[in-house]
Structure formats: C-alpha cells, structure tokens
Image 1 (cartoon, rainbow, N blue to C red):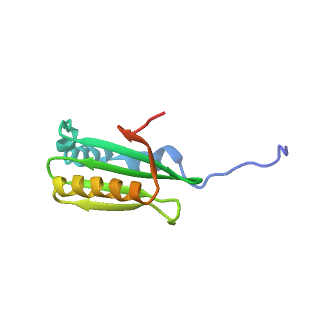
Image 2 (tube, one colour; image 1 turned 60 degrees about the vertical axis):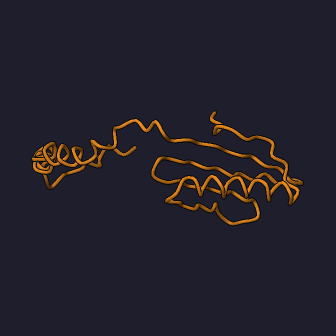
Length: 120
C-alpha cells in the first residue's frame, strides 16, 4: 500500500456528528411513544398452515385470524408471487380457507401438513 496518501478532511467529524445528534433522543422518544399500544400481547390470534403436494409441486395455504379480521396467504408454484387476501370478518376467512382446502383435495392436491406454522 502507498504510504504517501493522506486524507485531509475539510470538516471536523466530531463537531458535525454532535450537531446532527442534538435533540435526536427527544425526537426518538416521541416517535417511540406513538407505538406503545403495539406492545400488547395478542392472545386471540390463531395461525394455521396447510402444505399441499401434487406431482412435483408444493403449495401453501395459510390463515391468520384475530378478533378484528383475518388474512389468507396462498403460495401456488404456478403463480409468479404469493397472493394475500384480507378479511374484515374472521369467520368468513375461515370458511373460505376450509372451502379452498376442500377444492384443492378435489383437484388432486394431497394435504401433507395441516397445523401450526412450521419454524426452523
């Protein structure tokens, strides 16, 4: 490496950093206070994942329900990307999920797992 190269800074790092950080903690604390409501534990959230197999394909159908609504995610290997549907009514989402599983079985898909999401 060449020892002749020297970096001559045209500003003071410490001084500029101090100027940028003035009031940072106060601003951050205010923003953090807005999210205190999200620290609650959600006890009424239910998750279910179905893994299906047909020929050399694997598909996923997942549902997440809460007291206020639900979301269903479908991962179909024949599609470019996953599809997500949001429901205001959790009961309607569960009905759709059940109907979709039944239709998938009729169309030749084998449900190889149906339960809690797999992790690990």
